[in-house]
Amino acid sequence: MTPAEIATAMTGRLHPVGDGRSEALLPSPMIQNHAAFLHLLPDGALVCAWFGGTLEGKSDISIHASVLVPGADSWGPALRLSDDPAHSEQNPVIFAAPDGGQWLFHTSQPSGNQDECRIRMAPLTRDPQDPLQLSAGMGRYLDELPRGCFVRGRVTLRPDGAWLLPIFRCVSRPGQKWNGSHDTAAVAVSTDGGASWRLDDVPDSIGSVHMSPVEGREGIIPAFYRRRQADAVHVSLSRDGGTSWSAPQPTNLPNNNSSIAAIRMADDRIAVICNVSSAASSTDRRASLYDELGEDDARPDADPTGGCVPVWGVPRAPVAVCLSEDGGHTFPLRLVIEDGPGTCTSNDSTDGRNKELSYPWLLEAPDGSLHIAYTYHRRAIKYVRLPPGWAQSARSMT
Image (cartoon, helix red, strand yellow):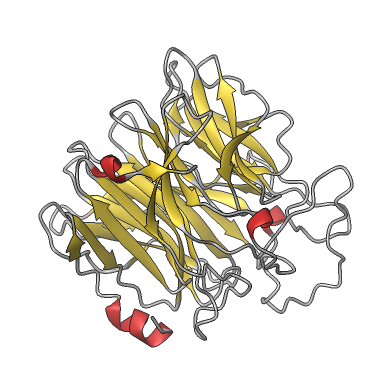
């Protein structure tokens, strides 16, 4: 589809595409839409949040969301949930607190400087008179955390009730531009319902970002990671309910330095949604994530000494749900949701060069259906619903 065709199709209306599957391109007035997150509300309504504007890193990038109410054949209008004219606001995460409150977390950074990012936490409320309307309160920045903390993974609860917010730390070098070379994983911990936070690092995690923990079994919680080195999805374990973590280790899933998400399904299998590609599968490269911003910044890129060499530009396709029956060590089955060139050597959403199918999210509903959202060519957020029993269509990766 051309950018014009995509824009025309961004109505939010669900379309059946066979075998019980339905799809939609969510409505948005923005020309760039990216980093979808799905959240189920108590009444069964589905929220999809993302960031939108002209170009990732620009100060007109803000958080948006849309609501799909039960039984509806169309998503509601795009709603702006943040609006800081001086910062690029990215990577929304929604959390249902034990007391029933709904919270929005997202990042806020000046231009492409992820190492200067702050995290904002704001109450999310729904209009009782109009179920399609959401708004975010003033909230606050989590300034007790160091600059450079980024979010993407869902918030979980420790057995003692502590809130665990997955973090990846965008670490810069003195006098050098951030480029991902020294990024590490951590967990922000709140023991007072989000009033205050501290940071616990994941050991030996350079290059492992976008931590995605899943529900544990017998006190063991797996967490999965995107990799700056574009080699393989990594996994680490907590054997004490989320208090401490092992160093990330590779799985047999490839990774292309693009986002992943993971859940534990009702049948106890673990599902990871990702792009099944890596640096070994393509020679496509770009200089950095923000090489199109045109920043007036004469600093050199970070020296990788003591860190890693980030790989950017590997194609972001296909989108596939990959299944593990051994707690996340191996993923022998996959179901391709969509394939394409995946070209991402440009972030531009207007000229049709970008063909990425990326930053997927997934959520299993109580009826066994699977809800998926991902970036479509940096122009739109695509939603896919698979019917109960969808996993029977998964095929061997070998």
